[in-house]
Length: 71
Image: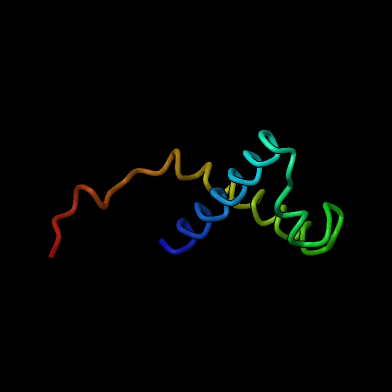
């Protein structure tokens, strides 16, 4: 599903950002979007948080695509 891919992309962005924070003390989202309290940064942080909540559903979803024959 498209929403699954979007959520995973946002999670990758969030994970890489947290890695940069942990290793280099560099918040790339804040740097690119006008600081941690900037409106755009808050939107990005919110979207990453929503994506994380969506990705929880991926843990409990059964993968039926692997069992269906390809046509």
